[in-house]
Length: 269
Length: 218
Image (cartoon, each protein chain N blue to C red):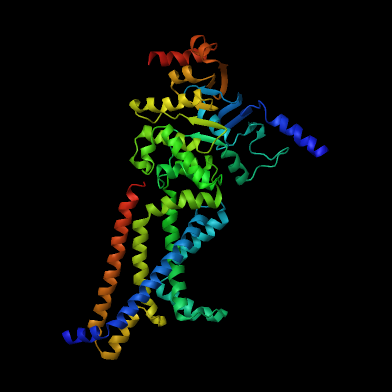
């Protein structure tokens, strides 16, 4: 009875309204250079958070700390209430396979797409669901075909990534991340490496996802996207969170001097 | 002269049997050496510095051993330690050991040149360990090294000729037997060379074909 009650309470506390991502006091240095200083943030289910800030402010490092591609020196990251990197209730580090299992619950889209060149478009989508998540092949393929249709690339199913344009590659990369049925999707400057005329098609897919209630953390330089699609803006400068606010107040009435300077540069451009 | 070739032609079955053995031996050696080479490359790229250095030392050492001597050691030397292999197995082992070292180094080089983006994405998607190596790293590494692996296969085919000294019934051995029985050295050896040439040409054509396939996957 005691055990059942314990499970029941844990289950009750674990499921409803736990933030999908919770970052508490994360710091990270590369050598002498402090990249992140005491960063905390919360991402609730269904929300889109945009992380903005000048180059070198630590945005990408923060994003990579969320799935422990970079290990924070201090502080904790929680995925739906589960502490990443350490086993329950202790300081014992997770094994690499435990860490991999956590990462498989977080989708990631990279600046340079990072598609696997030896696999077709469909192969890229089904690889991790089949071999990492060990889901049934036919349902995974059905899922993948639906996702390719969603990003408008159903006809590219059997093509290798080298034959695609940048915009197409990035849409495949988004579909690949979605094929994992992730709890949250991370975007690391997903449009920065694209030719200007290809940015729109990728942003359109990202906006659709935000509107459909996907939980997203987006590092971007696209202020238009941030203003339209974000539920919350986190402004980072020199590795510190300077400002957290809703998009309207951030863009129209930034509170900090640093944010004002940052936004002015974009208005001039 | 034409009489010599007529003698060889009359015993073409024997030559073709030798050719078949050479092909079989080379294919088997290539397959096993590739698997072993993949393991060696993994050790050469591992973070365990002791294992890495020991393996590098072994690989570098193996590349400085003349193949003929290695074959002698495997066949005539190992029985000192109670390991007795028949001539066929000893020949295969020598080919595998020798070429696994080369292939390990070839794969390591291609792996070192693999953009880190692929493994970065793989880590983010939950790949690690053997699965990461087998599904994400090894395929592009092998695709990238197809031409060099092809060269190595040609090396294996030519090295297999040394195994005649262990009386492995391969192509050179067959040619040698024909020439010593009927005293037709020129024709017998030239016929064997022609067959080696055809074999190596076939490997080159296969490599070219695979290269064109690999092109779109880069």
